[in-house]
Image (cartoon, rainbow over all chains, first blue to last red):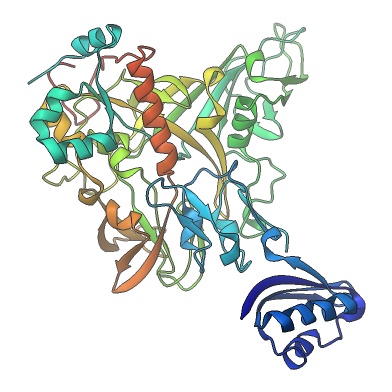
Length: 135
Length: 392
C-alpha cells in the first residue's frame, strides 16, 4: 500500500470533470480530500491524500498527467522559515496534526511538512510571518 | 555564606567568577542543595524574549538648515506617527504605533504588518527610514517642512526607553466565549480551544528574584544585545502582592522601566511582532544578572518550572469586562508539556515567550560576565515594596 499527499491543480476547462470519481472508480484509490478550492473559469486546487497499490497509484498519475491536471508535492505549499521564527511556540497549539511541534529539549519549533494538511490555522497565530501558505 | 557585589566584580576582573544560568542552578540545587550551590556560584543569569508592548525609542535628529522645531508639529517615520511634543529635534516612537492609513481592525482581524516596532527593527537591521516633519515656523526655527532619510547611526541619539517590561508572572489566557478572539495573548479559540502563556518560567528575570532583593533602580541589565539599566519601577508595578511561601507572587505584580542604547543593539535580540487582530509589538531579549549574595538569593533563583504557577484567566469575558473569573492555577512544567487541564478539558498550550531565545540571552549574558565585558552594578535604590539584600 502506498500513501501519497498531493496537490492537484485544475485548469479551468477541467473544473467540470469528475477527476476524483475516476481516481476512486478506475484506479481503486482511497481519496481523502483535505482541502479544495474551486474558482469557476479561473482555477481549481485540491489537496488529497491518496491510498492504494503502487501500480494503481502510478496509473492514476499517468491519467492525471494525460488529462492535464498538474500534480505538485504537498511540501511546497506551506513554507516554514526558520530564519524568521523566534520559537515562541504559539503556532503549536493551533496545529491539528502535530506538523508544527516543540522539541522538548531545545524548545525549538520542528516542522514536519509530511504531517501538514494546509489548514492554515497556524498563520494568524504567528506574529513574525514565519509561516507562509502558497495554496 | 554571604558575598557582596564588590567581591563579585573583583572576581569578574580577575577572571575567576563562576556564573550559571537560572536553568543550570535549578539542577545544581536539586543535586547539591542550596548551601553548596551558593558557595559554588557567584552570579545567576536570567533571560526572557517576548513581545513587550510598553516599549519604544526616543530619538534626536541633527538639525536641518534652516532649522526646524518639530515640537508642536507632526512627525512620521516610515509613515508611522511619532510623538513630537518635546523640543525642536526630540521624537518618541512607541512600538505599537501604526500609520494613519493602516486599516487597523476595520478589516477584522487586522494584520498590523507595519508599526513602530517594525521601524525600530528596520533601523537595528541597518535599513534607512524616512522622516517627514511638518510644523509651524518661528523666528528661531523658520523651517516648516522637512523630509530626510536616516540610518540608525545618523541619529544624534536613539535610546530605547520602555516604561513597562519584564512583567513578573503573567496570566495564562483562555477563551470561554463562543467565538475566536484576537488578543495580546494571541489568538484564542472559543470554548477553551487553546491556552496561551507568556513567560520564560525558570529563566524569567523577575521570577528568579521574586522579592527583588538584588534587582533595583540602577541595576545593569542585558537588553537587545547591549547593556542597559533598570531606571524605575515599571508602570503598573504592584509593590505588595500576595505571595506564596516560596516568595513568588500569586498574580501579575512587579514590572521594570528599562533603558538602553538602540545604536548598540543587535537584531538577534529584537524582533517586531504583528499580533493579528491586536496590533504591533516588539519582542525584546532582556537578561538580568542575579548576584548570589546569600543562600536566600540562591534558593529563589533555583525555583524550578514545576513550582512556578500562573493564574488561568478567561479573556473571552472576565478579562475585558474586568470581572474576577479565576479558572485555577497551572505550573510552568504543565504548560511546557503542551497540554493542561481546565474545567476537566484537555487544552493545548502555546507560548508567546521564546524559551529558546531566553536561553540564548541567559547564555550570552553568562559569557559576557565570564569574559569580563559585563560587570554587575549596585542598585542605588530598591523598587517599591522591596528590601535590598545585604551586600547590594
